[in-house]
Length: 605
Ligand SMILES: Nc1nc2c(ncn2[C@@H]2O[C@H](COP(=O)(O)OP(=O)(O)OP(=O)(O)O)[C@@H](O)[C@H]2O)c(=O)[nH]1
Ligand SMILES: [Mg+2]
Image (cartoon, helix red, strand yellow):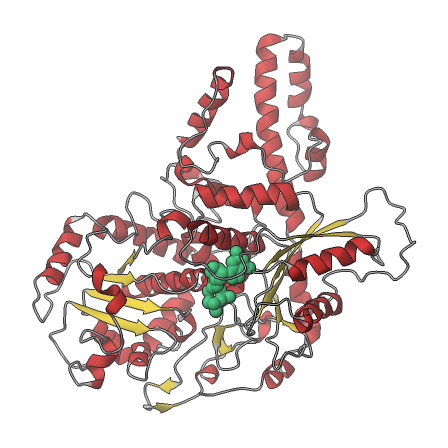
């Protein structure tokens, strides 16, 4: 294992330049909010005037005024605000349409018939000309029934517009992939043909029209989101079709991402029963076969399927997956069955055969999970209900939203005083929150002080409660008011429970809607939030020996997740090497010195 001193790494980058980047991360919320307000208000105004035109002729005059060149439609956020006294960004049940924790439209009573009709009309709109913001810059395809997955086309109302635009090459690659998935997905003739190979028990595969990568559901939810994204990128790079094992809860959490087909592995897939027993000693395991000379790169005849063991405990033979020679062998195998709990994307960059394509797909290298995550992961209506109800109730009205994700890997439950101290030290030192004043008698003169909503997520409630009490008991030195909100405290991981996982997903998503984000080292839960949000978080470093780390936190170098268990192998020279030093844009992570992450390069700072 190659370790690297993080201080060495940090010293290489200038803090002054980091500040410039802060400005980019923090600059969007007003723009996004004004856009939402503008859209909702514009829609309301249009409807109201249409009705008034029929009923009251006198309003014709007003209509003229409205249509006069100077008062055409509200052209800016400021103007829109005047028309709508409601806080900007507050999404009403009307605008949410059929969202009610169910995939069915809301039951609408007689007097609301008109409203229902409008909703139906809205959901049958042809999206071929979807506006850029609604389609997330063209990432999202058209052709979905909106009501079945409300989050897909409503996420833009809650998110800041991404500062990163997907490349046109990525967009065309996604559209081609969707076509491939439609042609080869479950139930199609090529799929049935490929299945025959699995059922035939022949030792070697005949070429198939379509090849597949099957993702086995494994590990905590944060890890699963990262590994599905990794497997999808691998599918894009190798022209395979990604099929997702639904496990116990994947269909309850995520909508279908590809139109007119399914990414879920059908229930009768012949290998599903073996998923649990696949391991590094399975006769079909890629690493096992290499180790026992049952497979070699010059082989013409390959098995119909291979099991890829890419979990954190994988061995040197399993790791040969990350070598070009092995990729050319794997390319001939119709079915690859993958189990991983790691975001392995950074190491794909180190394969010469993938490198150029990755550059073409992602001009901004750090946006891989950001774009693929926004493209793939749409909360189901049940989870979207959890997200939007919480957002509208507690976060929508704040002037600034801060996300703080607290995950400890200590023995025992906590709260731990050294972690409490660390959180506070980080928030103050980095000026994420204002200090509290010792002078309790000082009263803010403003009737409407700036409000900051802090969304905390943690398995326990203690940390958030202490901070909340502190900001209630003392004024801030700036006069700002600070509220703390924590949606759940599940006490411990309970992955077998539906509502537990729904809440975990909702909380990752809510964190991603923050203006600024603080995450915990080592946590994939935090990586998902930062990646979806396009936020460079402050990372709370992992405490050692129950002591508050110094410094308590540091700014991440990029929004990309960290690959916790990368290989350290030079495939060409066939010897160990530090894979964090091969290309400038794949370096060691801030929170795990032996991990790898994608980084833009010096210019990013
Ligand atoms: N609701 C909620 N659940 C959490 C929180 N932190 C951890 N969990 C639960 O614990 C699981 C932890 O697994 P991951 O999602 O992979 O997150 P992680 O921080 O990388 O943790 P490990 O995988 O256990 O190392 C989550 O999926 C949740 O089930 C939290 O803040 N809120
Ligand atoms: Mg994890």
